[in-house]
Length: 334
Image (cartoon, helix red, strand yellow):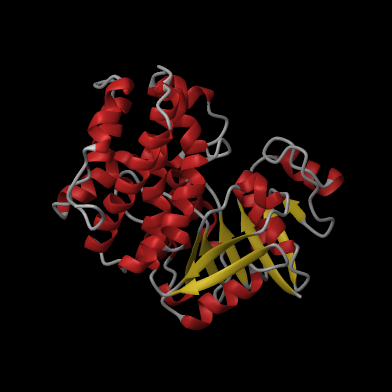
């Protein structure tokens, strides 16, 4: 059995460890920051703080010792908040096995640098891009943990790398496809979070399906423009990592980004939302760096700009929808 390490025992890290462990060819060890979380996984086969009501495979082990978790791993899946990836890699990046495939499960850009997570991995840990893969798709943790069928895409510039990841990360209820468009796959997962926040805002205000459908459609055009400007393939944005993830994240109450937007729409300030959220909503921290990147390429992103105004308290959430649905300039519905 191949040993696989998953770094991060939040809802997504634990869910993906379960996906991997439910493939009988894998031996999976999960790194948890907190000892009580590791103990609960090992003793009760649960992670009640992050996946309430979900039984975890008895074969899944957890530890707070990064060296123990990483030792001998052939694949390492990283699932920590995007803004803490750099510091985590500085702590235990040197422990990454020399020939292991490193897989990003994260959907964010680094605030200070604007780097995608695969770029942070390459820069901080010195990992060859040939050994790096990213996974994205319409993946809501609780639904997957409950074994509801779904799919994702594993992307790498190296065919053997992405194939190995897809084989490990597939089982009877979870199918992983492959592509070579790392840029598009990562940006699809990042940008849909921002559109999900926008849709959450108008849902919190009380607008209906017509408004939300308009924003989702225009949002797809907006995220496609941005991603293509940075080298992504347009077809990726209408696949699992783009449109598929956008639909799931924008419409589900299980989505942290949708929930954060909904609270903003109901009148909570950004500070209040952040205090009330038990887990990170990556979309909130990605707005500013994405807009800086958009400005650098002269890409028009009116929906994301309006979200930023709401986050900064400069626009009443009720005033956002007319602006959002009038967003123009894109490959869809000129």
